[in-house]
Length: 238
Image (cartoon, rainbow, N blue to C red):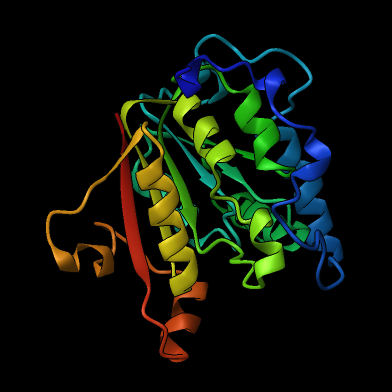
């Protein structure tokens, strides 16, 4: 069966799917809490109803392509892309409250009509989205879960690649960046084993070359300081 034809309800219990760690860090300051409350009224997606047939209606801006970023952290990359491409709709997922608060503080200062956010498990959003509704998915510096007993919590898995394949349009791209060699190899092996994705690499150095217009992230900066070489992978939905 092609993964795009698989019913989300047929997947295993969500109780087994815990791909992120803690939800909170330092105590949220009053101004951050206020930004969260007001920002959520404008930007937060609610999954209580069926998704619209056309996801472009989710945005205030008149958008064409729609991209999803899973685990946007402090939001540096997502803010850069959404600001640089106002005619593209961006959905950002971040369950870590402190990261979401930082994002809501940023858009309070500079609103974005082409942005929506979701603050819970990304698999819930993926299962809610209509088939072939996205042009791209970014998973940048995800938690590598380095201990072998935790590898099942890595977001890249056959099950989640099925989810990606269902919601990506043919020709859509899944982009993955990490500085952890074992997770890079893990992702390459899983994507090469999945019949819906083709690795896009023209030459050997491609996977160490940042994406066009890449603004960098604080995670990447830390990796470089600690002498870990980031990798940037792109897979095309067949």
